Image: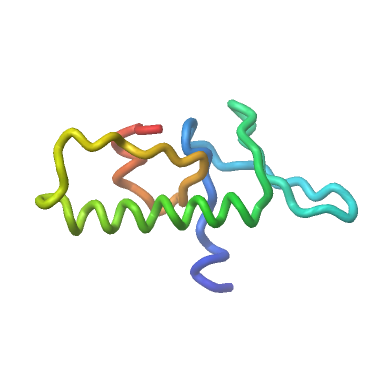
Length: 90
């Protein structure tokens, strides 16, 4: 099992693991059991990866960016993102 397969996708708002469903003949759908946020598994993985990349780059550039820059919102995040989990941000 690859590292990517071990990462759990969480709802960006609720920080709860998403549920998977695969309607016959269609793409796998992920949905949050709490708030109902949903999309295809492919799009959820893409957005979760963008969130992780944003966090890494933000940490690297933290001294260089403007303090009044708005926070970005991600609908899906990876479970390994402890910084966002501990801050409880959406």
